[in-house]
Length: 136
Image (cartoon, rainbow, N blue to C red; front, side):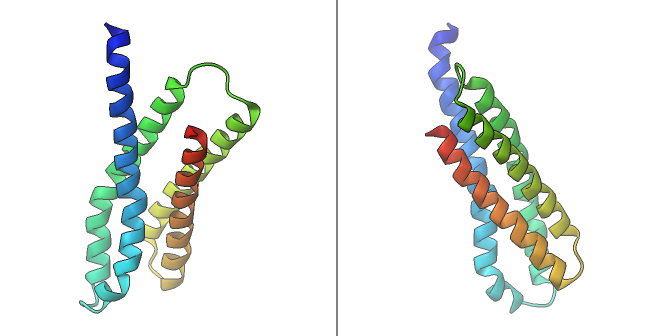
């Protein structure tokens, strides 16, 4: 019975991971792309949009972390040293991106909003690319 469920569980695991990455990474890129227009909507519009996005993005980040560990647990057999190193780097980058996003949400100056937003965004994209290499 377990062997029959394995392909379905793998599909669920990978679908949840990709969907969460779509929200977390794609959402960040979308918000950045809309930021100029959003700022013209009013002084507090950007902050309101950021809060709304946070309600979607943080659960997506949690799903990414959970399904990421599930993905690692699902890997069968020993992986090459280079794969293991890349996995370690990816885990560190995911953590940095999450901390940077959290700091971005608490920043009060334009400078720190930009710094932490850039670190979160670049880290998230880098983690996505590393995930593609790990899956390949």
